[in-house]
Image (cartoon, rainbow over all chains, first blue to last red; front, side, top):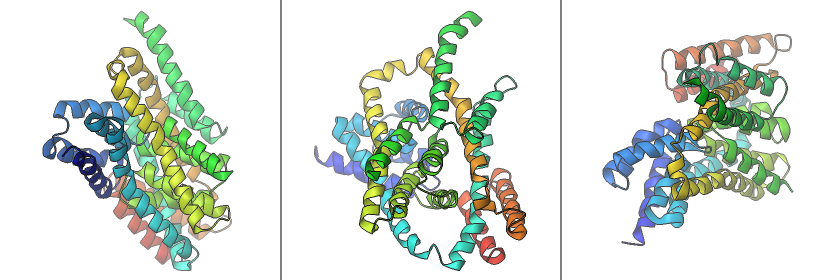
Length: 183
Length: 191
């Protein structure tokens, strides 16, 4: 039983990795079903905390959650088991597609299909931009922040990494010096 | 040494990739397309489409695919390209693994302090900007053609952009289905 937990948690997250289409948030109900209801590795309240932390931290959301739960179960080795479990299905599927697709890329039919898909992808990234803006509760005093960030990256070629660092630092300074004086 | 540079790049992306899969896309795009020139914009766009349509987190999918394509474009063989995708995926996951272990070990109690929360609060509007920049950077002539070069493709591309935005944003059509529709439209109208 002691050894089986690695295999068991690996299998569970492998399953979660395979069955989530669309990634990220689509994954939450599935993880809850498997990890909270079926296996009872963490309680429902703990799961809410885990989701909040995994969302605010950098990196792939599903990997963050998997690492967290794996570590809960069996420390570092458990974390490695669940992380590999989550990443492996994606890795294998994409690899198969990449090898296959590299042979068909120059086929005129395939090329035409992708000429149609590309503008659609641009829209698929544009839509969550607005949704994320709503969730970030932007108002007339903060709307300039995303606009300036986007222009800096798009027009000036600034690396998004610097934007992230500056934004985090600004948030820190705000919380440290300005917020205490507001109330 | 392209593998080392691949590892370092995707490690950076994993470390600074806030805001989930989409937020990460703008980092991946900046690093792989704009600064290292491992991929072209249209190749990157194809990778995003395929990552969206296949199961699994978008971040992992696109890292695996970018790793493969980067090595492939550099003129190496299939096996080397597979190694490239393993390198990129491993490098992307590593910061998460380390950071999450550190947090569950010792920083759990700091995560809810007002100071840490204000850092995240500062990040949120910036991530919106990151996503907007990714959108703008994908609007180029590789993906849309130009009114001069190929007016028909440009017109159809713009129509598909508007249709997809309306379909997924307003009518709540599943994005995967929308990609299939767009591909079908491309096959018929842009062949």
